[in-house]
Image (cartoon, rainbow, N blue to C red; front, side):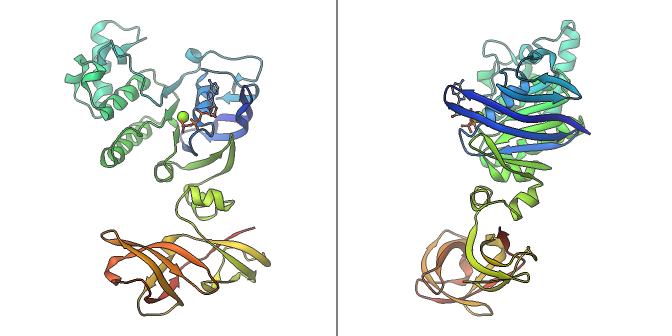
Length: 341
Ligand SMILES: Nc1ncnc2c1ncn2[C@@H]1O[C@H](COP(=O)(O)OP(=O)(O)OP(=O)(O)O)[C@@H](O)[C@H]1O
Ligand SMILES: [Mg+2]
């Protein structure tokens, strides 16, 4: 069942088309990640769904009810949608308890009990309820913001870059904690991020956004392995794009004859390999190449590998190969290359 349906949403700020025709179905109970570079319209989209702003055109339908259609608009507080904004946005002058209890109608004791339960849900000690936001770390503030949003028991949670202020280790741990809380509560989630790894790890559905539009919407595996164009491929991870001549499910390329994922295509096209499909060894089977540059970075070395006809590509290769500039190597490829039709 579709919980949230966005259809042809448009939003202009003066001459800037922040959203330029966005369509998306969000199934109930799913996790959707919207990923795209800074300024592509991610926050604008969440603000329209939350009801902080109105679309110029298009419709937002939530659980069968039209929330906005360019002329009418259901106000934010009547939508039953929770949001954790990009900057956390806790009230700085209120304690954690007052932040979480803000807008709750219960008496003080009931509020405290609910707030304590929410704190344990997001993995924080209830002793922190008496603190002010500036007495918490960035990660703790983000969790309080999540607890505050959960307190309203939303059916849909909007998360705008909720982990961006955290360092790598804490980021992964917080992401896991938040994901667990949301799935346990069965809350449908829309996560905005410009971190492609985060989007691929978090979501069942990934929407790749560029300049106010979705370039592609699909499962994490699909958008990663079968991106619609080289720009989408490069946004989701390292992409090695090679020119090729294709026929009968095979491509003649600078890396030799490769299997492709498109049996029907015939003719010239660019093909995509991901770095994990390529192995570079000093001795073994594969296409001949030469190390043109190499920088030691610990477990791997950042290398540029030259093939024939002036073609070269960059790859992290295991440092145990002990390769030096000018060394001859063999390049092996596993799996299928993706064809950009
Ligand atoms: N209130 C506003 N007035 C004018 N322009 C705006 C306004 N809000 C957003 N914009 C513009 O709309 C575009 C999309 O902005 P938005 O905040 O949605 O981007 P974003 O994808 O969330 O970026 P980031 O990753 O940096 O948070 C940008 O060009 C931005 O400058
Ligand atoms: Mg933003």
